[in-house]
Image 1 (tube, rainbow, N blue to C red):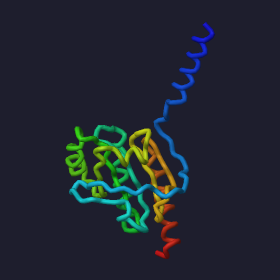
Image 2: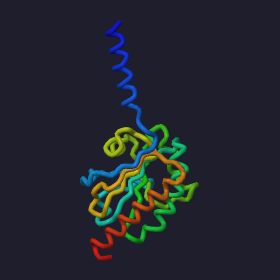
Image 3: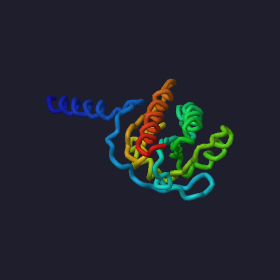
Image 4: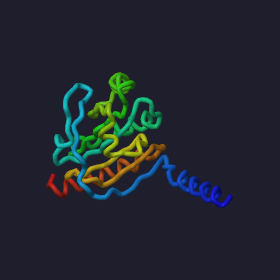
Length: 178
């Protein structure tokens, strides 16, 4: 009986510990971001290194993710506000081969103009977001060091995202002189 109780408590402990929050925002560790190359919607190979000296917001999403669809118009607004100031939003679709055919029509119908990359095998998603919580964003400074991470989306999160983007763009300007 004691053994069953101990095993039950152990199982409960693991179950509680493995539950991930739907939304977290944490300070990143300042480590250099892992490089990657993915195809864009226009079938162009795009690498993180293509955006040297730019602040980069990596946003992982999928067509089947409701909160992602709500967040994306806000990301478009942020992209429009800062794209001429050394900022780029790389929108990375985590749709697999079964649902990736829906990405381009969705992006076109919503009028999104930021770069959209396809991660059909979810290799890049797994590197940056092993929990696969969507949406997931990671902000990289102009040296491509991770400075902020954010999981999930609730209304109002866009203000926090923009604050971090604005601060990173200002830090870039100070470091590079313009």
